[in-house]
Length: 519
Image (cartoon, rainbow, N blue to C red; front, side, top):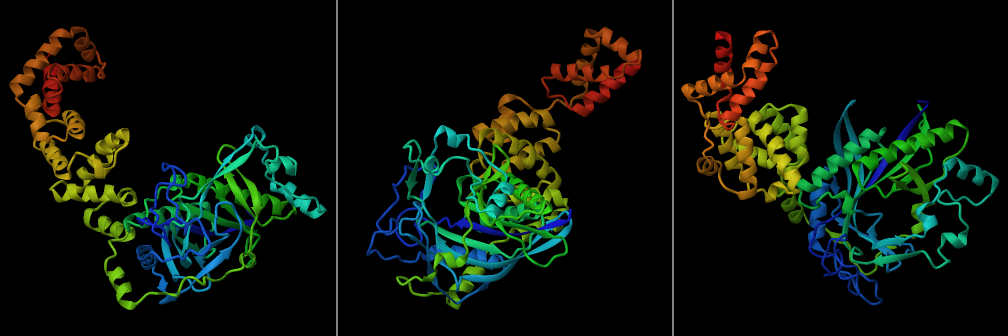
């Protein structure tokens, strides 16, 4: 491809505090909570109200910044970012601009092309905006997404550009009375940490991997749930393309409304292709903010992209400088947990797992912790991985439960695996027992004893079942002797059926094979 992408990311991460950034309003679930039920005069922007910084939010932000290797600025300044939009009640957003909380961090990715270091330009605190719900007319629901090439042509000719719809301005603004937007201020004022990277990404794969790595990090630090679909972590790529080998940056386009890693990767891939096609045909790329339409698998124009000077930043007059003293900073540093990449190195080194297996355990913090507890209870890492990521995870996915709500304690799963290893029960029976443990919370030993599920290993008893099976299926026995060896599996299944699934499989196979050779 004659063009290469140059991509930077802005990631907004809600700090999971009990109260908002500058007031005592509770932080509620913006999806399930009734609209406008967690709002006070401060976060609603009433004149004369004064903000107060949430110390817990600052501490959470420090955790992330330190984990990313950032330089923490001992003094940072809050600023007002001025713009007018229905979801920002004050007419400005309190954020940090010239003197942010942290700068100059990095994160290392393990891509298909090798290691890649992404530089973190800054990490700063700010407050979230409210949430808008748009109620659209029929024509808006069926809006036409046109190509940005049309926009470029209109721009060249002086014709007003609108890549979003082909309707008149009256229809677009909803003056017909059919379209309207609802404002929910529950989210207004929720503490955010914005992490801005340098434009170091060169592919959609790198962008997705960074986002996944960052989500794992904030989960390990217990500052955010990582639920993209709920909007508590919002990833906004700034994408441009340029002729390969050029050092000049192209015109950037920012994508909004990406609520999954798949949408992120597809949106970036689409924009790279769209911009490359424009430049390849001699046209221009507009600097704009676009949305992602999942149904159409395409971006659509939302508005022209603002530059920093458009926001008229100035220091927030109602807040003093934020001072991070050395004692506070060192306490936060000392309390940092094991980070995802540190756990990955340890699991690979201590347990001999493959890189793919380690990645699976590191991605979900609870999964990895549960696995380690099973191993600590005396199970080999290989068996523990198979049972935890296989049967147990399958049961939890079907029930929509997590490891923190599982009734199967790690020690009890280890005991179940031990029963299989000792020959007390076989593998199929163990799966049945695990399913009952999952619903009842009982121990494996109690379930096996109460239901009489202990494995039959007595050769005399199994030999009798084999003889009965052969006597009841003479045609199949003859077919086996005639060369149809697959019949063996049928006969084996009949033996196990007679045993109620409790016969020792290895013993049953050996005795059946012996019986068939003698006939």
